Image 1 (cartoon, rainbow, N blue to C red):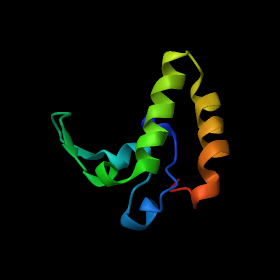
Image 2 (image 1 turned 180 degrees about the vertical axis):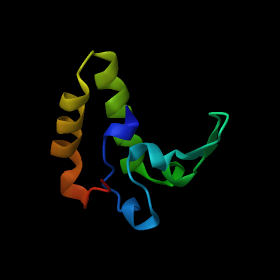
Image 3 (image 1 turned 45 degrees about the vertical axis):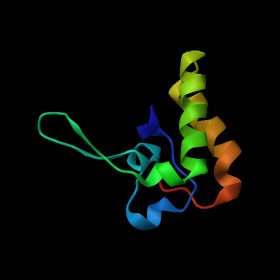
Image 4 (image 1 turned 180 degrees about the horizontal axis):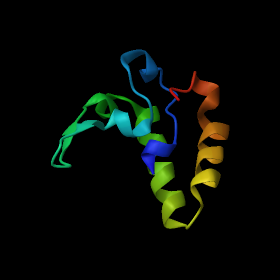
Amino acid sequence: ALRNVPCYCGCGAIGHESNLACYIAEFGADGKPTFDDHAMGCSICVDIALDVMKMTAEGKSSADIRQQIVGTYSQFGPANQ
């Protein structure tokens, strides 16, 4: 779900393409993730992920989740996707 929403903390400048990239740098050929520690120091990244988790648990669609994230966080900076 995090792959489908942008982040608004400015992390696009370091190559992040979605909120997922704030946590996962890449997936290996075996599917195992290599973690990125960027979100450990960024409340916007964490808040977006928590909102996505909450809305996913509520059964909201990917489109509705994305729309809510964009509406809530676009005030903080440019989207990274």
